[in-house]
Structures are given as C-alpha cells and as structure tokens.
Length: 206
Ligand SMILES: C[S@@+](CC[C@H](N)C(=O)[O-])C[C@H]1O[C@@H](n2cnc3c(N)ncnc32)[C@H](O)[C@@H]1O
Image (cartoon, rainbow, N blue to C red; front, side, top):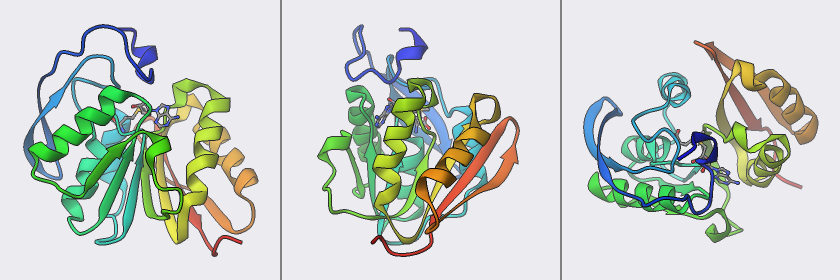
C-alpha cells in the first residue's frame, strides 16, 4: 500500500499479520504488525527520538497517544506507568486492532485503543505523547490538535515530535497563537532532524 495513506480509516488490501520484534522500554518485545499502517516494520525514527527524549509519564492518571499506529508510544507509556490508563486513538481501524492486541501480548490491561469518536468526551488527560500525522495536511492536522490539546488537564503536558523539514517551527508558532495565554509552547529538544515540542496548559480551562 502507498505509505502516504497510512491514515486511511480502512486501508485497502488484505491485512496479513506478521511478527514484529522491537525494543520498547529497554526490552525486546514480541508483537505483531500488518500492512496499511504507519511504520509497519519497526519503531519510526521520529517516534524513537520522542521515546529517548521525553521524561517518564506520570505513574497514575489518564494518558493519551494521538495516532497510535501499532502502538509504540501507548505501549511504552503503559509499561512505564502500569497504574495509569492509556487511551490510544487512531482513525485507522487496523492500528486500533493492533494496539489492542499488542497490549494484550504484553500482558497490559491499562491500554484502551479506540477510534477518536469513542473516547469519553469528559476525560481530561495528564500527559499526551504523539507523533502526529503531519502528512494528512495542515488543515486536518490543526483540527486534530485543536480537538485534543484542550483535553489536557491543568498542568498537563503534551509532547509532540515533528520533523524539522515538515514544518515543526511553523507548527510551534501556530500552536502558540492558537492556544493563547494560558498555555506554553516551547521547543524542548532538537535531535537528529526532529523537534520535540512541549505544550503545557498553565491554568485550568475556563
Ligand atoms: C506519524 S503516525 C504515528 C503512529 C505511531 N504513534 C508511531 O509512533 O509509530 C500518525 C498516526 O496518526 C493516525 N491519524 C491520522 N489522522 C488521525 C486523526 N484524525 N485522529 C487520530 N489519528 C489519526 C494515522 O493513522 C497514524 O497511525
């Protein structure tokens, strides 16, 4: 399948599962992957940068992975914080199913993978990790971020990894303008060709 369409809701072609061996949270893990999803062969470079640079998530509370793919970010949060509840959303049905099955394979019962519309609208999140889908286009990316970032709890933080040459700096400026004065949007790190943006809600929602 064309890798440009990893964000299809129903990717074309048969979904044939195959084994995926990856290191997550410092250990080798036996998972599954399939075609028609993002980075099916392993941990994406940007995802790896995010995982190596972000502080550990809070031990408890509600954590969110926006655009979970086969689950590297959600599964790592769940391994690090077994008492937290991790919500992993994706529009791609194969990704939702894989993240669910990969969590089960790791014996994790604290991951809820689902479509975005199935998340309880009242849930607020203490931490968000995301390698957001830049290739969906600016308008859709902006609408995804304005949908989920306001769901950060007061003092909650979102960590976003974005490739420098795919508009990381303009996204940072847009976020700062869009979110306004009760938020802080900073460039936390630059590593390889990626920026990690740290978005913090500094006061309670009105
Ligand atoms: C860059 S990939 C990251 C996948 C995974 N987190 C990883 O690190 O390998 C972005 C993901 O966002 C998903 N996506 C695209 N549009 C979305 C939307 N509106 N809401 C939720 N997920 C979306 C795509 O299907 C894709 O799996």
